[in-house]
Length: 367
Image 1 (spheres, one colour):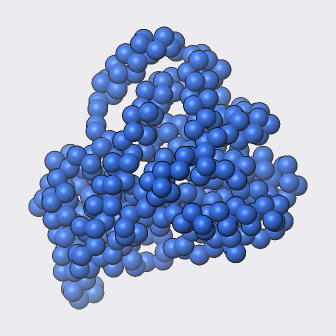
Image 2 (cartoon, rainbow, N blue to C red):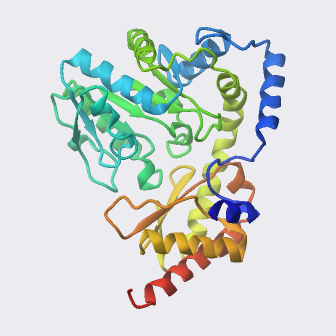
Image 3 (cartoon, rainbow, N blue to C red):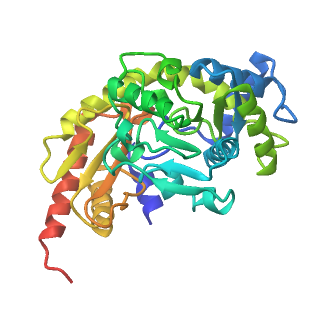
């Protein structure tokens, strides 16, 4: 079974991205942090841990207020619904690779009766010319996950903001991986990157490494409504610990580590870009994320992954993306503590072996 094969590997590039700990180790670490910080197990989302975390995210993003949600799906649906009710329009502008379109079972449609309109092109960030008037809001993902963490350059991003203002169009940032954007934007603050957006969502479990959680940030009125929708959608957890203190425990550490993760992603992209049979996207890397585009079917890629795991002891991915109608498929690599501490030569050798295995499989006669 693949789970046994994964456990046999000495390098693991898949989620979770940081150094593993057992559940008991994590709970002990959270308990130690809570005792050191004087935090109790808040019986609601109005206690010190929630207020401290929400205040921290609001300050980082330059927004007046913020609210924690147990999931990003819930947070993004709340944002879209609030902007729709304010504007009087049900139309929401989405990129074809938007998380709402690909990974949420169309929750925005089924739960909130929103009408998605696709703008932009796969493989390219949303641009000013993609925006159209009359919609409730436009969702802009920074960085764009299914393009390997690609970002628009600063001038393009500012042009997008300016065009939205001209159209009186609300911008919402899908900033699930916002934490990795600063190096690409010459270390501009998160607040400066977010400026011009009416609201932003950030993830706490992806790059930060908390067990669950997301935060919406925006105006005081927006967050007041977000808290109402959190209750309506079942997100007002009675006992939100250990998720909240765990996020507080980790966020400063991860933000301090992030420039090193981005630098390692660039180093890895450069080392992998010369391997025949695959392409690296983007190269150089924009964030701590990159994609390997493989000219094969999903079945061939998964078989090659298993071959690499057996021969090299390197687990490259839990799965590969097959989102564009067949070939090529995409293997995603996110740099966290695991990739940052792994031997670069072993990763490169494993990916080269992956490309070789795919080439051998593609040369076989079709069944």
